[in-house]
Length: 175
Image 1 (spheres, rainbow, N blue to C red):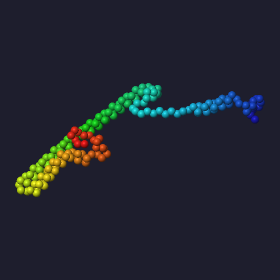
Image 2: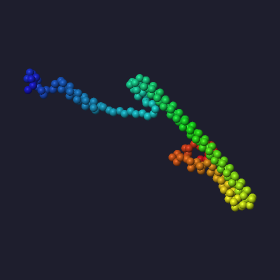
Image 3: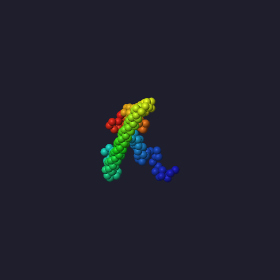
Image 4: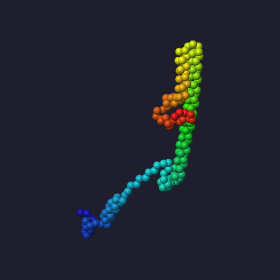
């Protein structure tokens, strides 16, 4: 047997001691604490966190909230600059397309007028069938130029992934 037990025979091993009571109380306290543990989840969306989270950032790193604000402002300026550049590029593209369509319309009208004039000249010089053919193709060209205009070319050149109503248009273009 253990020498300590022999020195103190009145001490019963089975009797709880203060240290063993403390450990049982600690175990019961741990169980109680386990019952009261809860999980929290916080999330936010947008460029800035809520004020309470910003203050916690300041607790961890001095001036962190100010740095977050500066970063957000810088990002917003950058995004706005990119959007402005994109808008300017779309506007320039729309203007170029508008002028190209007008030039095509004028050239088509000029060619159709020349063909109609040649058809009349052919008829007056005695080449009736040739004049009718050339003049008819010229008149059909004039009609097609004004009826269809730039819309037939626009449908051929457009990107199929972009809806046609979202493409930039200029005044005078047919929708």
